[in-house]
Amino acid sequence: MSALVAPGARVVLRTEARLFGRELTSLFWILVFPTALLCILGAIPSFRDPDPELGGLRDVDLYLPVAILLSMIMAAVMSMPPVVLAYRESGVLRRLSTTPVGPGALLGAQVLLHAAAVVTSSLLALAVGRLVFAVPFPGSLPGYGLAYLLALAAAFSIGAVLTSVSPDARTGNVVGMLVFFPAMFTAGVYLPVQAMPDPLRDVLGFTPLTAAAEAMTEALAGGFPAGQHLLVVAVWAVVLSLLAVRTFRWE
Image (cartoon, rainbow, N blue to C red; front, side, top):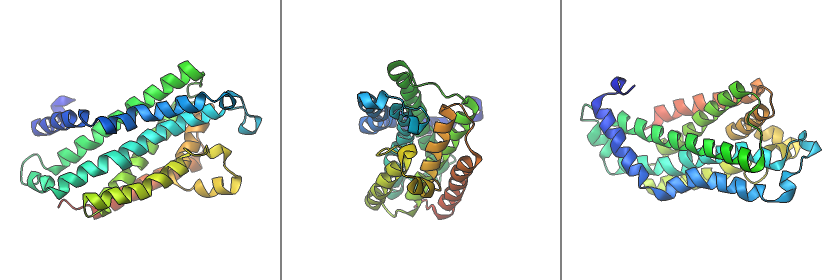
């Protein structure tokens, strides 16, 4: 695979990987915090009791997809945009556009590194959920994988739009915080989606992270995710990606 990547792009990727490895705060929130939250909630005895109203699932079962979505939010909304905005504000992207490497290599490296961190965090949450709280592995692996990939694309498309519309790093931080808390709510961090009142659940079902939580929980329970949920996540991912491409500025 490395032969398919231009030498200049590989240098950029190695450099960004070293810099990313020094961002211990970001790594903590992406890699450690979601699983730590799962452990804290799973330590509550009532969260480990099956609930007939949830189809026999336990609260800790519902929080496994939430923990995974939380790592996506942390990476795509809170960690990656400030880095890209800082590069644009300092003129790094503009200077790279005059070289054979191009600024696209740097943006690609950022997406790749943050996505890799999310995948690592997800595997950690799945392992801890299974070994510590006996959360079952997804009953439908193809369904879970598809829902996961769509959720990942939707989360990073949100971050891409945030980066595109923010004129500078300071504004980007403010916009990021405005997006961060609603994103956590719609992902079910404060209250699992399946435990929400039906009218609220129906409305939020048209948002990307709620639909993603629904799809991943359905796959966890053994069924293939409903087409409506997958379609909602996919449409959001495509629309937001196109919007980010049209509005992004290199300088």
